[in-house]
Image 1 (cartoon, protein in one colour):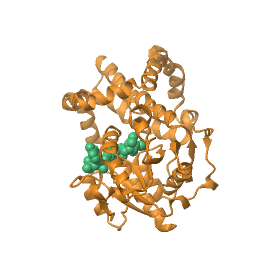
Image 2 (cartoon, protein in one colour):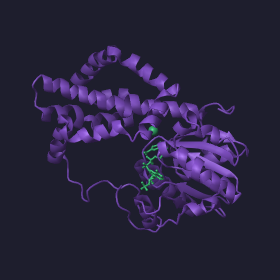
Image 3 (cartoon, protein in one colour):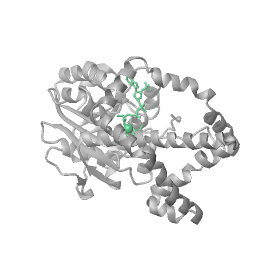
Image 4 (tube, rainbow, N blue to C red):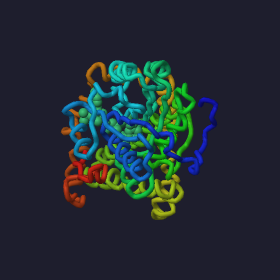
Length: 366
Ligand code: NDP
Ligand code: MG
C-alpha cells in the first residue's frame, strides 16, 4: 500500500497536469487499449498539456494496428519505443512479462528516459517475476489504474460525459510522482468522474481474479449450466430452460447494477422474491462457500497464476478443448437457435466499441 490507506480519492484533486511533457504510448489496442487511448486523446484535446500526446504501439500488420490507424492514431514500431515517457500496458496479461522484459525494457534503457508504466490489472505484477523486474532500473514508476468495467463501457461512459470507476494502486515509486501520474491517467480516461478507489496492486490482483472466477464469469456460467441441465434431466424443453435460466439473466444483472440486490428484489414479483429469499441461500450452503475459499487461496498463493502460465506455455490445451466442444454443447446449440429467434436484429452485426475515432472516422466493431 506504500503507506497509503484505502479509500475513495477526492475527485477535486483530479488533474492531468502530471502528464505535461509526457509522450504517452499505449501498448496494445484491444478492449482497454482502444478505449483508454481514445479517452486520453480526447481529454488532452479538451485540456491540452504542453508536450503531451498519445501514440499507440501494436503488432505490425495486426488487426489492432489497422484499427488504431483508422482511428487516426500514430502507430509506432518497436524501434520507436524508446521515445515514450509513459507506457500504458494494455496487452493481454499472459504476454506482458515477455514483452516488457525482452522488448520494452531494452528500448527504454536505450532511449535514456525515465521508465514509467501503468497497468489496467495487477495479476502479472503481483503473481509473476514481472513485478520484481519493474522495481529495478530503468523503471522508476509502476502503477495501476484498473477500470471496473470492459473497454466498451470505458469508452461509452466517457463519451456520455461520465466514466467507469477504477482502482488505483502504486507498485514502484522511485520518482515520488507515481501517484500523481496514476491519478492523471485516471482523470484522462474519465474514471475520476465516476470514482477512484485507492488500494494495493496485490489486493486488486486477487479481487479481480476472484471476482471473474467465482462470480461474474466462472460462477455465473457454472450456475447457468447447472440449472439448464437440471431442467433438461427432468424432461423440460431445452428452449424453455434457456429462455428462463440464461436469456433472462440480463434483467437481474441490470437491476442489481443499478439498484443493488435489495433494489432488484423490490422490482421483481412477490413470488420471485420469496423464492429468491428462501431457495437461493440453499445453493450457497451446498459447498459454494468452501469452493470460493479454495479458489481465493489458490489465487493468493500464486497457484492459479502458475497454472495459467503453464497452460499458455503448453499452447492452451484446455481453452482449445473448450472451443472445440462448443458446437456439440447442448446449451450453446439451443442458445444459438433461441437467440436467433428472439433477439432484435442488430443493424450492422454487433455493438461497436469506441465511438468516433481521433480522426472522426468510424472504426469497425471488435
Ligand atoms: P485484448 O485482448 O482486448 O487486447 C489485446 C491487445 O494486445 C491487442 O491490441 C492485440 O493486438 C495485442 N496482442 C495480443 N497478443 C499479443 C502479443 N503476443 N504480442 C503483442 N501484442 C499482442 O486485451 P484487454 O484489453 O482485454 O486486456 C488488456 C489489459 O486490460 C489486461 O491487463 C486486462 O487484465 C486488463 N483489463 C481488461 C478489461 C477488459 O475490458 N477486457 C477490463 C479491465 C482490465 P493484435 O490485434 O495484434 O492481436
Ligand atoms: Mg480481469
